[in-house]
Image (cartoon, rainbow, N blue to C red; front, side, top):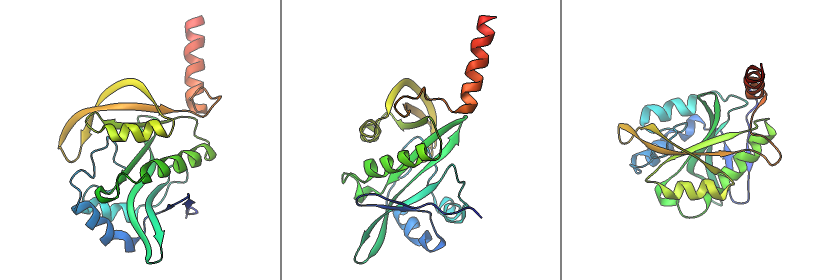
Length: 195
């Protein structure tokens, strides 16, 4: 069994989802029809997803968390965030419950997970949001992500169809944004062109 990863930021505590979180997650999902309006889905979007999410064993390099706000009455869940692998890229995905948006929780959680991603050795992170969700773009931009200029069709669970999504990328300062595997591919391509 992998060691569970926890992150403490200024106001938030990010931790793995546990079976006792199931009811709270299902309630949050039921009250937020836009819960899956970002262009990634490493968080639960439906009741069956919530069951899988809390039962999911963490992958060390691709952790997923519930975002909680600790308080005197306990730690309430306000969203989910994590890293996933999509098309060979490490992708950041997050969701904040509708009644918790506008408080800076998304930006704070994104920055905390990005810091963890660098610690885990990732050299590049991508993220996407549907083009009609500019607030998500502001969160990503505030965390240092930059637009790639690419807009791709991504499946939306809530819309039940593909919809245009804007892609962002982030690499640490001084990095070319490629991990070792991608560097090998790039070097091979450069050698082929030179030959």
